[in-house]
Image (tube, rainbow, N blue to C red):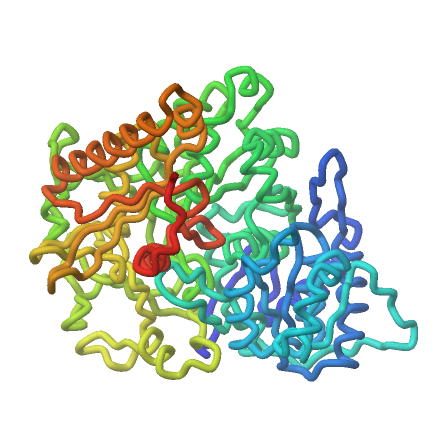
Length: 596
């Protein structure tokens, strides 16, 4: 690994600290009684201090050191809450590689088993840490499946420490693996990114610098899943790095009651909080004027927005809607990152206003950037995702020639730096393909290929789409998110953020298919109307024609097929990204749930 070269770290973190075990030990020595994490559960506030976290992590690690060898993997299956954080740090304290995973649905666990089984097959964990409820709910799978049966199991929430079990400090340094971050899998099967302690510490320093070196008194609020990189690294571990406090809530609580997210920011005077673009959209739709009167968001200084395409219209609408609550335009923090870079790649400087550029959409199809005025019918607004930090290098590269693109030319985003992990777990060919790229004329530096498209302007990165998702029809490149946005705005019955555009091959040509979820309330009204069968058929025909016309008018594309789906059908990653490849597979296999 490249030497850690940051001369001074944020908040006085000593350079001698090489792991997150060192970091928690140091934090505990400084302020053992300070609350590290608070979990909001219904009306309760469940809290754990730095000292309590160290004690519980050591205790759990002592058990693991009796049952698991250093370097083996531990599967983490937890609902939102403090137990997950204790288990994660317990793994670090045992020298065991944590494997965070999406917890199975307890009512119908078989629905989430395919991804979990793929992770277990790949990581080969020696132990599974979970809660008693999940442990009991998986009894059938534990008894019947060798994948589940061949692991040690521990329900850590009911574990009573053995007084004779002694914890000993594992032999770790910054090159030691901390955990495997399984990718969201928006275009492929999940792969385990090998994240080291050094990768984490460097990336946390990058994030801290970008957020203005905010201090120990800066509270965070997060509803993001803890098994996802933005929730774990951007919130839980960033708070540990800063020595501050993070207030957590369940993702389900946020989705059902988005007001509670903003209410927590207001109540706990949080300076940092955020999520994907859809989170802000959800607040715009669901938070009422009466609820806004209860909010004071003047404390909010960093509202990060990432993990999916960032819409300029969302930033503007959110600022306008919540400025009455004290929200400021410069609080918006559009950023870019991915698991293959640990998390964070680019972001603006603290309190910089978002940079928005309007470009010609048809020129982007030819990988060119032409700036236009906002009134142009061919205009597309792009939000800048900031610039690189510390020693990390970010280039936009021609994916064919491997030469650096000229400014304002679209290419693939490549990244190199101490925050870039060594590769994928036990996937040498894919590791070399993704993490071993070299720029023509600079073969000495290895770059990570993000698979994302974008361009640079004066050091600012603009992300334009996903290389693998690109739809190429009759020699023209089409960004699926542009098509999806046109569909979303074409009719009020289309569910926002629940559309997938992809191509299939028919008659030796690429054809466009659009799958869109329908608002269940609108559909139910039609089903209950007089002459329901006729009304349903008429609705489907009219909506399909409306979608086809919208795409034809905006993109000059003929649609091969429009599929209207029931709510919840479109496959998404844990962070809410549309899984277009999985949706395409479902379409070809005729397994998508069509409205009837």
